[in-house]
Length: 124
Image (cartoon, rainbow, N blue to C red; front, top):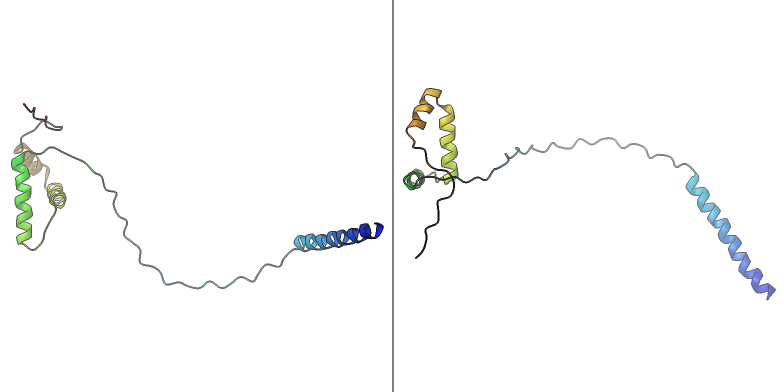
């Protein structure tokens, strides 16, 4: 039985020696690789930053809503279809370009309405 014990001890010693070699290799400093020259990449076209969109709702009289529909039809006939939001945004730009007196006059021509959602009709 002593020979078996001797055989078992021998690989253990080799394993410890191998482990020391591995540890010694890890501790040794490694030379840093030579820096690679920077390659000039063709510059990508910068994407335009999209504006943050805000969703909102508002109340509008039916006759003024019809004006939006009429404007949409006119734009389609002019071969430039437009959405309601585009028409409203164009109107805002037109108002912003007006002098103060003209804006005040335009707002006086618009009647004030109660804000909020219309009341639901009661079914009988």
